[in-house]
Each structure stands twice: as C-alpha cells, then as structure tokens.
Image 1 (cartoon, rainbow, N blue to C red):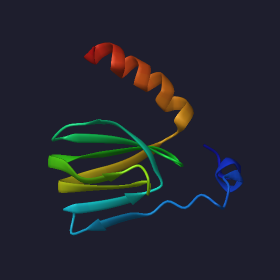
Image 2: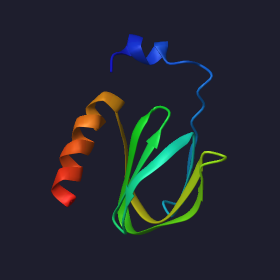
Image 3: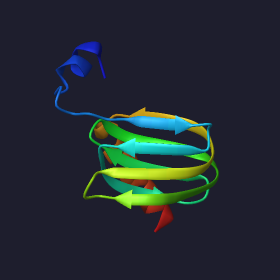
Image 4: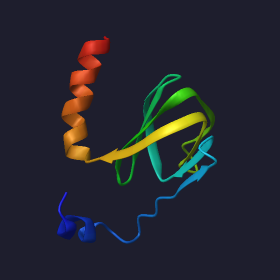
Length: 98
C-alpha cells in the first residue's frame, strides 16, 4: 500500500490497538475473527488483516456488536497486511487446513 493509498483511507475509520504489558491486547474496529488458536489469532479489521502471534493466546472478549476483541496471553508479534493480499492467502490457508 502506497502512502497516497493510506491517505485515501476514510478518516471516519477509527482503529485502536492497546497493548498492556505484552499480555493483553484490546482491538477495536473488528469486522470478524478469521481464525485463532493458542499461538496465532487472525482478525479482519476495517484497516486490513491483523495477525497476532504469541503463546497461550486466548480470546477473552469478542463483541461484534461493538467491534471489539480482547486477546490475552504472551503476545510477541503484531502485523497488518492488505485486504487484497489477504484474500489470496486466506484461500490458500483454508485449502491447507481443510
């Protein structure tokens, strides 16, 4: 995603990530939880796919009504990726794990 494309993202989209002591991650602007286990949580947000990696991960709060998710555990990695790229990855990943 180029800088111009990032600037073109609507200013009405608000996304908050609050990481407390690498043990509790609060995410707002969540559209869907695509997959999760104790090492990886993949969340579709309004700004793209968010991948959270760590150990002993668990979802303590999931509210699609308020678009919030809280992940707890030993969090070591957070990364966004573009929605267009994720669609092809999601298809590939879903084929592997089916």
